[in-house]
Length: 146
Image 1: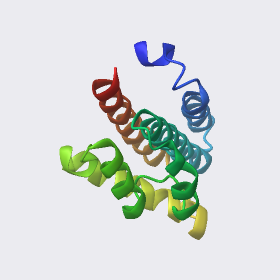
Image 2: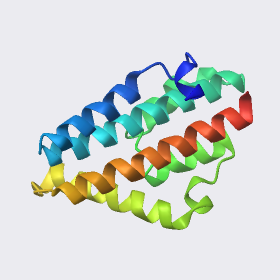
Image 3: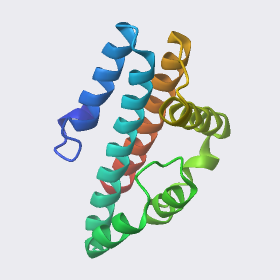
Image 4: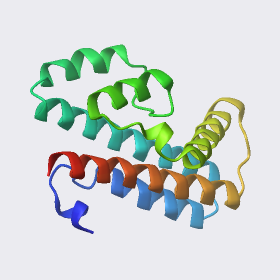
């Protein structure tokens, strides 16, 4: 994929996605779900930082990073910053995908905070929707800036 060749993306979130798939295949479904979310947050942070740089407002990256609770684009505050910075209405573009992503975020939170035991189907669903979200973020970035 051409995206993988661009230095913006490096390999950090791609390595995390591959690790999530290995964890799932090894039946560590909860770890796969958490790792998948981490990959999404790393991608979101990268694209926001690079978008601020390209817009000439990179001085906002650190202050906003400190104000945001994390880079979970499923968090309404983070999503609003992402949408404002990128002009990408990610939640409205594909409402069914966004609903599946929000289910993934809830699943991740339930795993971490409530000890939810996840199934292979849960891990599969989380990996699939996060891959779709990351692909959307990357595609939008490249269509906007390259």
